[in-house]
Length: 254
Image 1 (spheres, rainbow, N blue to C red):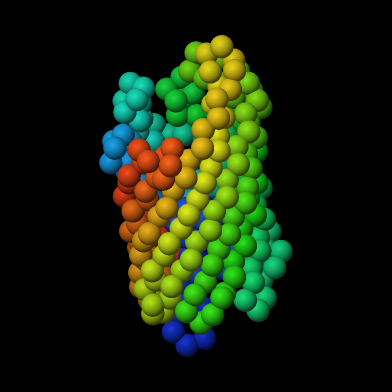
Image 2: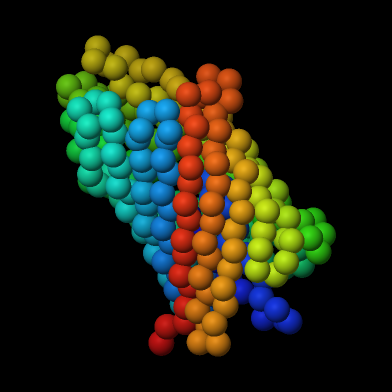
């Protein structure tokens, strides 16, 4: 999930999500955001695209959003299509001084074709706890801790099992200017996949992701943020070597 706001005192600053880490700023009243990201794995040739739209309900205390993933997998069978869509609710529990905290609860819908490896074949629940800290005038850090539960998850042959996953990560943002940021993220996820005999296999993915982002602000209130990063797997994830593109539009609505 990738929120973005503008701070009105003086020149606007970027308060956008890191690319792989969720930041803790909900959308402010009267402002909607449209977010796109695409990651390409240079080793496997897989690509992953997501579109997210975030709305305040009616202000930044409560936020609703949805995320639509589209995936192309070279194995198995060069599968491509829509993955499992997420419906998200976030509560802005803390937003004061230099601290923001906004726990999220998501319902994951089984819209992806599990027979092609594009979905879990069952509805699931996910929670995440994003915390954002302004360390100084030039540095901001973000932290995530979350979990996913999918009862009756299926493998392509139809075998079922209840699966669990965890995610945690952190990012450090250097505010080089009001409109240009240098970024470094570290994330780790663990996920269980169902095997043909109904057993479960756990996989851990660890990524380091350096990147940059740039914002353009318009008198109409529109803010466009574009970004580029280079996720790299470490340890057992060393086969991941990717490029990530990010583009978001935030604007007022009536």
